[in-house]
Image (cartoon, rainbow, N blue to C red; front, side):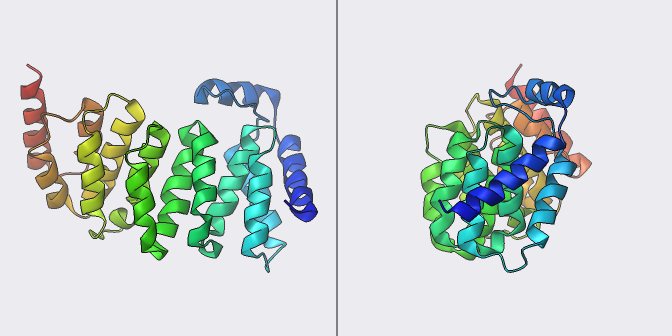
Length: 246
């Protein structure tokens, strides 16, 4: 890792530290139930710090982007890692397929939805859209023993489905079907979340997929998934779910 990347990461870290507070640090650590240290910097303040740094470097290149992100990820507290996620998200169009292993390393050490979700949906999701060969990586993730990686496989397909595109639904559906019986809350929530967002533009697609699976799905998944379905579909599906639990 080069000296300039370390210096830039140290500069961002110093600003994050200055913008934090011990009270907020304790509150955030308790809320996220994380073992990471916290500076107590709010998300808007963290975003403003990263954005100001990025705007001062309009010629930021991919190599420097990734090395600064890695240096931030190695920082002493949660907000450094969050800054790395913000930076990669803001400049995700600079990333290439070869950067997927970096994203995976971050996901494996994130340990909280507050870092995983942006990396998975926005950063990895963008890479998969632009480099379809990375769907093979998602297939591997979907069977990983780490539930955060399995969650990431689901969320990496979220953004185009939210836009109303359906090309990725079959892949998502395969992952979700295999994970439907899992007891891990963050998997159940992710399945429901993606279905909920898909249903905003493709309600019939979601209802048709849920109909034969309503009796297997968890309450968390069902409540999320049916939230934006028409009332008749929502009531029918929830009745099927409840019937299976009598």
